Image (tube, rainbow, N blue to C red; front, side, top):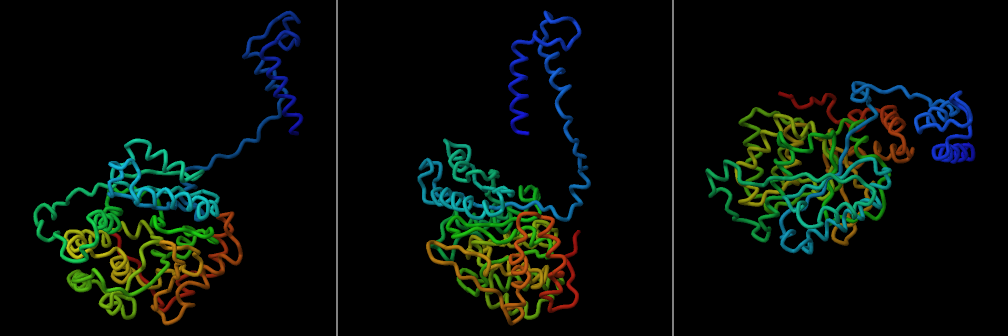
Length: 399
């Protein structure tokens, strides 16, 4: 077939330039055909292409085996423009993207884009081109994050003056604000997608993923996937009290056993790798909570971290059963040190933190085709049944 098509291609070119040897018009051998006549003549002998039935927009939206996922990197501040990209943060971004493309993105056939959240540096010099080059064959999206002062900052500036964890620069506190509120606001570019996977620029993967993180989240009905669960009380002064008072004032009934203990004892999801459900985090109840945190000023005053805040979001608005630990399926380093993950002790043992679920997915190798991967997860069982401690889990109430 290849030889036949090559021959036809050569013949078409020859006819196009010397169209007077074949009488295809019925007007005699000396009639010179114009290009349109040549094209019709060649098309008459070519095999008719098979027409694929177009899929409607509705069918695409309703297909349960498709998911809109996006990887997210954040790079702001650090005088990126002033140094023309020579700042440490920008260098780390370039290195991290190159590593991500060759490991994670390649293992997923580069079917998901990467979104770079920035504060405007992308419009200067050749910085955007350098980022695209680092990402290789993966698709790159640039999205602006506006960290301008909120109304609360303008009206109550005293609440936002740093008092604790002073070693953290302003750009670090801005970063926390993006991850806590701005990334989920009504104008957030994240709303174009179903799930996001955040990767910090100081993470280096030693190998690709053995699972599709976004299909896993959808099939299991999870709202958050994490790599490390830990307890850390630094830079958290006043936050546990804020979270519990918010729950009381808004009549929020927490369903996870010992939920208040987790909040008061500074439980957190380590933030450098995490997977989230966009619909859940942008829902009315969650977004109002995030806005209240931002308006309080604790992100700047005490440098409250997104790690503890995300954990509290699950305790207040979802349930431990809606999370999944992926630490056994991630092979990565953090600042050159092997990243050793740990599941939360929500249920007292490892098997109740989702590992059998994701392990089954990986063992069967259902990565290449979304259809197969999704069906395996469905047939293996609903994630809420596999790791359930509570018989009935109620989703957050949409407003």
